[in-house]
Image (tube, rainbow, N blue to C red):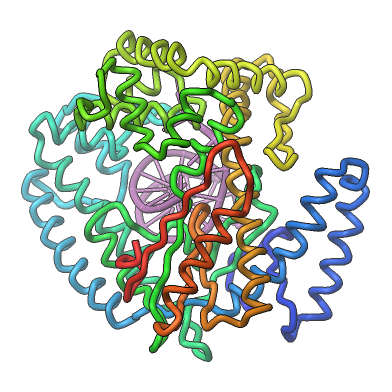
Amino acid sequence: MAGKGAKQLTFDQVPLEAASPYAAEDADITLRLHQALWPKLESEPSLARLYSELEVPLLTVLSKIERTGVVVDSAMLEQQSRELAVTMHDLEQQAYEIAGRTFNLGSPKQIGHIFFEELELPVISKTPKGAPSTAESVLQELADQGHDLPALILQHRGLSKLKSTYTDKLPLMVDRDSGRVHTSYHQAVAATGRLSSSDPNLQNIPVRSEEGRRIRQAFIPAPGYRMVAADYSQIELRIMAHLSGDEGLLRAFAEGVDVHRATAAEVFGATSPDEVTSDQRRSAKAINFGLIYGMSAFGLAKQLGIGRGDAQSYVDLYFERYPGVQAFMDSTRLEAHEKGYVETVFGRRLYLPEINSRNGMRRAAAERTAINAPMQGTASDIIKRAMLAVSSWIEKEQPPLRMMMQVHDELVFEVREEQLEVCSAKIRELMEGAAELKVPLVVDVGVGDNWDEAH
DNA sequence: AACGGCTCGC
DNA sequence: CTGCGAGCCGTTC
């Protein structure tokens, strides 16, 4: 969208809109893109195809999604802002009482001074610059030790984030003409091939906390429509199964079992998945996610709040049970070192200039990226293919719906009530068929009167 | 304006 | 010492 304020857009973020007042400008940008990129792509067939058959067609689809926008109930958010202000003021007064003076609850520096100088609380960890950290995990630990002030600040921070970023800001971003909010999607920002979203970012709307989900309740369909959210189930783990070819993991997905539960049964030696405790499942889930991110045993220990030795034995046991995953990780690292890049299933490349760095930290970071990028990037390729398929169907059949948002593994639509069933089924079919992997792709489709309910 | 610290999402 | 983003506020220059 034109007319942004102070914030500077990078070249990659310049929104392209077909059939807009900027059509001539857009055509010029597209031409310059071709001139800049094509010479680097044409010699490599997979890159050339990703560009001309995926990214370029997607441009038009994204442009339409941006222009469509989504209805946000401003009155509901403004009411939430007022309620948050009251609660936050309450928390502030309580905090001043405990601290014995007033201070800015939004200032990590002032909090650090009060905690570690005045109240002499223990320093749990430090920021990269050496200051005592007051991050969420630190406040949580201090709160668990029975300190009241960290608990208050924790609560205050959560509410402050919701208010300043979402409930205050989103109503200001509703377009006067359309009455909807219109994000911008960027195709060439994230190194892995993901889209990013800004002004407003619709890819980080809260969902995990109860208060957060109230914000999603303000995202509503147009009158006569219902909200439909379709998201890929465990897509990155499925891609890990595909890329590694690990038999145990392939079998788990082929049988359609709860994969975290299956992992827990394997790693913790339960005789059947039914015996897995909720704690074991939670640990297995952390291991699975950690693998996708290239996490070390140290990181897993921190995540689970267990000893380093215990975490290492979990990881060892995991690789013993899923040897294909171990081999995949090793060969991915090797490939990254030898070629200087890694690839997705569709041949999208991520170059890793620091993979052979003499700086151990940088090299390790590049190795983690090498592990993660093929999975994150393949998932991005797949949902982009799905968006093209859905878009082609929309153009051909003109179903009564609008594609409104993409959130990495999820597509959100508003669909006329009369055609809800048939449209949902078609969306599921097109998304599940967007790629043929060694495991099935599974899409969960939810329907509701707002984005929260559709999950 | 730039940066650090933090927190929201997948 | 787990990957990829956007964006807020406070602080510093």
